[in-house]
Amino acid sequence: MTDFLQLGIRKEINYTLKSLGIEAPTPIQERTIPSVLEGKDVIAKAQTGTGKTLAFVLPIIEKIDVHNSDVQALILTPTRELAQQISKEIKRIMENVEGINVLAVYGGQDVEHQLKKLKGAQHIVVATPGRLLDHIRRGTIDLSTVQMFVLDEADQMLLMGFLPEVDEIIQESLSSPQTMLFSATMPNEITTLVKKYLVEPEFIEVKAKKVTVEEVKQVVIETTDRRKQATLFHLIDEHRPFLAIIFCRTKIRASKLHEALIANGYNSDELHGDLSQSKREKAMKRFRDAKIQFLVATDVAARGLDVEGVTHVYNYDIPHDVESYVHRIGRTGRAGGAGVAITLVAPKDLEFLRMIEKGIHQKLEIQVIKGVSIPDREDYERVGSKQQSGKRSEGRKKTATPSSSRKTNNSRPKGNTGTTTRGRKRSR
Image (cartoon, rainbow, N blue to C red):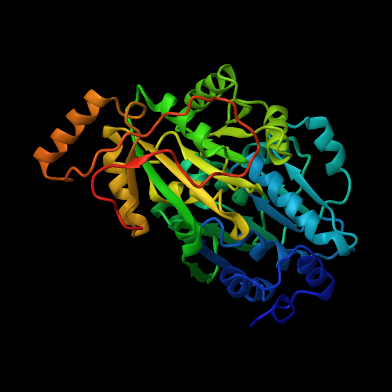
């Protein structure tokens, strides 16, 4: 089995990795690290949870010249949270390496505070596009010395409309650096960027680890938009998760759901783009410290979110693409732990459910909670309609007893979901 020393990582860093429980490289690390150390441009197609951050962080640390105070590496990310997470990961890995400085540059921080830090030696800069361009235009950061450039989550950059800023940063500031692009998907716009800036890149593709999907218990609860909130409250009363992330489609829906959770006695906070940076950091710290039990988040804000102890993920709104679904449920069941992912599906969401099942090559168990997710009258109307369409046959009817308690605590999850399977049970 290949280890990090064989890949060219020094023993001091290898010692730190082992102390963190990282014994062997993942496939993306094993294939990427040697190429980066050789100075090659790299295109890496890999899903979240495959270990891609260390795939570029480790060789960058190896190649930094501590005697040169210039900015030597730039890592560009789509969100503040991801910029923070990567910079923290670098500092953690450098525990036994002296002399390398890293700075995270993102919106929401005090500009003057960033300016003071930029006056010192900063070998590695981890930044979001908007704030980095602000510094470039102010003349407060010089990127002409950058030798290594990483574009992380390139498809998310595209989704958030950042590609023009990325293009400007590369054209105006960078002078032929070694370029590494990491993306879960490769849309045409990303391919165009690759052809424009990368020189004879090595293409590395690593399929999403099956553990991301298959080791998480996945359940679909059929409901209606009117009953979605009551269904969620019933589920979390039954499950009693230790820590749970609840995903919503928009910032407004996340904020409204958070308010409803608080009003009903649940220990919750929210994470989305309308919050100030200080509030986002505070919410994340409280969640990591288990001072809150529920974090209501949007996809963009939670991109790259990695918190130990997340036992449950609730898709309050079903994601509209397979990648987002895999990313969401990958927030639970980390490091070999058990995880549960519950997706609430209204009739209008069935098209997205079929798309997700096709994308993960798996049929998901579909349940109803009579009297909660589907009232008795609506339940029979729904079944009758589906019988007529021939899409699903009706199975045995059972009534799940709704929980009478709304108190939650930080206990480990129970095995019983408090729901019954409706129709034919789908194999996992």
